[in-house]
Length: 325
Length: 279
Image (cartoon, rainbow over all chains, first blue to last red; front, side, top):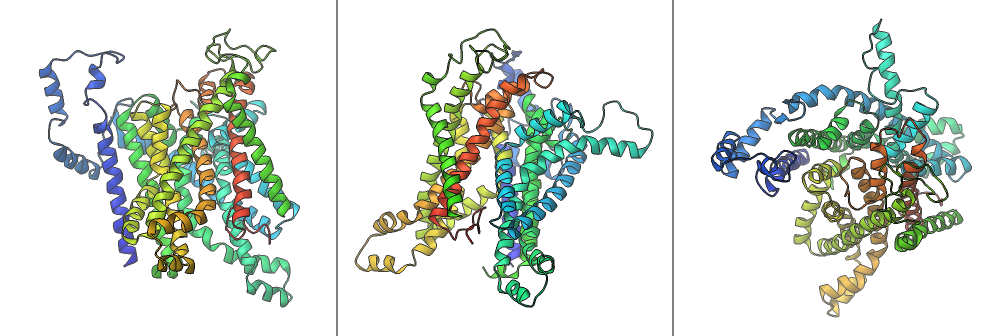
């Protein structure tokens, strides 16, 4: 029952996002052609009233809004996100062409930062109040205060330019020919290091704090004291009792954080000119490629909302108490 | 560990005080008029402590005036968000039917990813400080509204509320005199969280070129530095990119410290990111 109402809720959210996407360009002053005919435009186009009407009719913009809305929705369901002005190709095609790189970047970074966050959070909680805990805490608060683009640029300058050990732009060496697939994989990984490191560093705070909190809660439980009273070794208690129990909230949070990660790629891919969707969004903004921009917006938001939906579902499965809220 | 809290809180407050002073007294602190053009791309010297940028503006003066813009946006957005969010949270927690409606709106706004929507709207409208503020406000009120509401839900079950009702206290009186004072600490912490968010988000939008080109915030200074083609191959980044970036970092750090100290003071049991330090 709960799951069905959740499904309905997310359906409504997607409808709202689609409607925002539909109404944004239509809510702007003027009509679709005014950016062409505006005397302040880069190259103003002169158009007779007749010509205007023909063009508007061609794009179906003379029809009532309700009809335009239905056409738009049918188009979306068919996977038609419009035509990119800059790339002169269907928007969906342009996005899918970049998807691979974003998936590689988000995938590796998520795996690394969740693992690292859990380890550091557990270490911190285990050594609570002591020097190691305070050191970790202060460093992670400080790193989390950096905007991700600033962190990325600093890493690029230090490791890419001063030390010159990692490439700072692209996902592969341009015009490279590889003698073996292994060499290609190495090249891709080599390019991945700095963007992934930036994403990991700027997102690790969430997992770290959650794990530290969760672990501190678990360490205060009676069964930990029982385990100590039984004379079990500290290492055994840490691994068998504390860690496994403290991990529960992390599992449910992981899907949720993928959403933040996707947003983070917008900046990180821009800094490192990494050819993923985030960088594409930056290009769309710089070239005023509105159809592409809207397509990416739709794609990203639905991906993030989808991740949240999955997180919700996992949560219901793992913790039956949520049902009886 | 009480001491740690005080130290961090004071450091944070110190950092913020410095930035606020710089923002308020910018015309007296800045060595030059930020719009005045000198020789472009000059290295740091005694007359231009941080050199000049590609069109010859004194970078230090730009950053000093940028403090005004960055802090102003964060302050205005946070204040209005808290006013709206707190009022709606109070109403939503106290009156069930209206509360249900308000919370559904909050749910929807919180589920829609903030950043992509702000980016897409910002690229449609002409970027100006006021447009940016309006954009941040769409989302800013939701989190305080949700948190205040859940606090009100527990507060209104207290006996002293029943007692006030029995002696004829009106709903408005109860909300104003008995519930509002109890949620103020939460509002202050939310205010700081929102300010952190706006500082980071505004600099992010500027970085993507969606900032107000007329009002140079720290983010805009950074953006123009990033756009400069020689930024990587010379040392220019050290005086053009690093200072505005560090200003953002230190402001966020200062806010985080103060927020942490306040949160611990108001409610030691509260599960904050640093929770459990006093155990």
